[in-house]
Length: 123
Picture 1: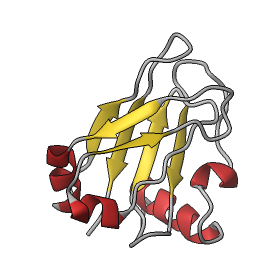
Picture 2: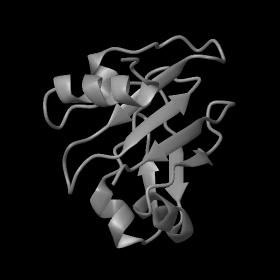
Picture 3: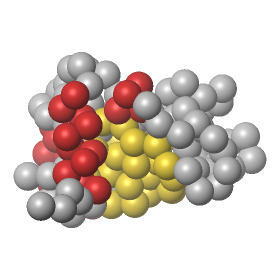
Picture 4: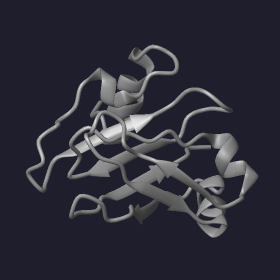
């Protein structure tokens, strides 16, 4: 049986200790314009997964409870990076997440760049 990328990420997430970000399990911290980092959390109503494109230490925690609440919310995605970005998820995007659809949002531009962040909350 082939393992899909989602199955691999979900399996990797299960190996991480509760409450830790996937980025702590390992990831590519190179800022080469093509690396990706993955983060998630198991706190606050279950985990949503996220992928931060061109990642170099950033992380974000979005929970299923956040998606279910459906209210616009902003997150600081600094993580282990030496600078911060803000990721703002709208009420409409949370509705998509609550329905099981992934969304891709561009972070704020800080330190001369932004990141595309894809969040998914499997049912």
